[in-house]
Amino acid sequence: MLNNFERFSLVEDIFPFLKNYIGKLFVIKYGGSAMRDPLLQSQVVTDICFLHFLGINIVLVHGGGPSINNWLLKFNIKPEFENGCRVTDSVTMEIVEMVLSGKVNKELVKLFNQNNVLAVGLSGKDANLVKSSPLFENSNNLVGSIDSVDSGFLKLLLNNRYLPVISSISSGLDNKTYNINADTFAGSIAESLSADKLILLTDTLGIMQDINISSSLIKNLKLDDINNLKDKSIIYGGMIPKVDCCVKALKGGVKSTHIIDGRIPHSLLCELFTIEGIGSKITY
View (cartoon, helix red, strand yellow):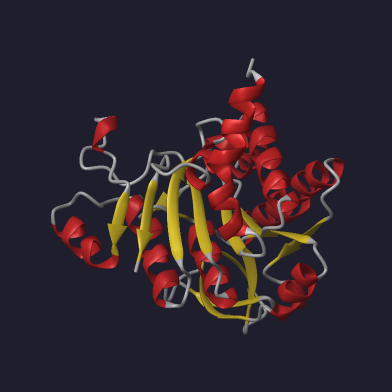
C-alpha cells in the first residue's frame, strides 16, 4: 500500500515522460503468451486504456497463433510451420481469418469498450488498408508480404479518438486473402503513420547477448548495432523478423522501436515510464 508521499513521488516520476507523450502516436503489436493468459490480457488492455486516457493515440495490431492452432485441431488439421511461417493453404486461411477477425479481434474490442475506450475492430482488408502479394513464389501457401498501406481511414479514426484494433490479414491484387506476420504488419502500419513508437509485445525479454542469461539484455541499440549482432548470431531465429521490422520502421520515419516481454505484468508501462525501461529499445 503506497502512502501519500510515495503516491506523489510516483506522479513526479512519470510526469517528465507524460509531457513528451501527450498527443503522440504509438503502434503496439500484441500476441503470444500475454494474449493467451486471461489475467495478462486484462492487464495489457488496462494499460493501453490508461495510455489512451492520458492523451496518447494508440493503434493495436494483434496476432493469435495459439487460438488458431486450437481451432485447426478442432477441424483435425495439424498446424504446420516452415522457417517460422505458418503453412497456410486455402482451408487453413479460412480458419485463420475466422479466428483472427471474427473471434480474437472482437473479444479485444469488447474489452476496450467495457473500459470506456471506443475501439473499432478491423483487418487489413477494411478500406483497402493493406494490400499484399504472396511471400513465396510458386506456392499455395497464403502467407503474404505487404505491398502497400493506405492509412487514411486509420487517421480518420484516430482524429476522432477511436482506437483501431487490427488483425493481421489482408487482400491481394489477385483477390486472395493473405496471412501476414503480425510483427511485419505492425511495423508497416507504424511506418505508414510515421508513428512516434512501435512497441512489440513478445515472449522474450528483448535482444539478449545470451538467451539463457536474463542480465544479458541489451537495453539500448542503434541501427548500426544490428548487423554486427546478426553477424555474431546474437540476433538469430525468430528474433530476426522482429528486429527487421523495427529497422524498416525506423528507416521509414518511426522515432523509436521497442521489443519487450509481454509476459511481465505491466511491462508496457514499465518500458514507457521508467528511465531504465524493461526491454530493448532500438533508435536511429
